[in-house]
Length: 152
Image (cartoon, rainbow, N blue to C red):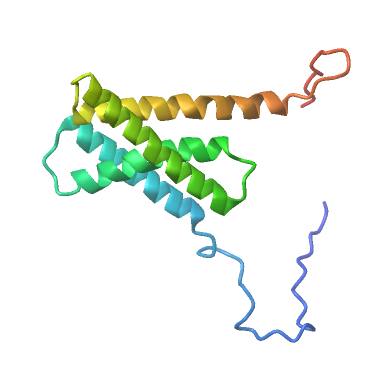
């Protein structure tokens, strides 16, 4: 059996106790915010598809229509810095929504449900290659082109 020792941070840098960042729960809220955004977007899509009369329908549906394509485009743009990635993803989401709306108006088939379904399906189509790329990158190929066996 091995004993693990926990090292305490040294205080010889002259930092104040209030200036140090404490590790632990409540310090990284990104997972919580991502979950809340996903829930709000899902509620917006559900309210729009079921045609429910709710005061939350319009803002949640708008949130879905912006975040679904933005998340798909942002996933595809992994190489950019975070600010550029967010700006490109939001601009792409607006462009995708405008193209869907323009296409639906051009063929005289405008509906809220159709727009939500079209944006959701196009966002999924944008997301699939980015997710598939991660699976293919994880495989290491040897020089003869075969995949090495996985060792448990």
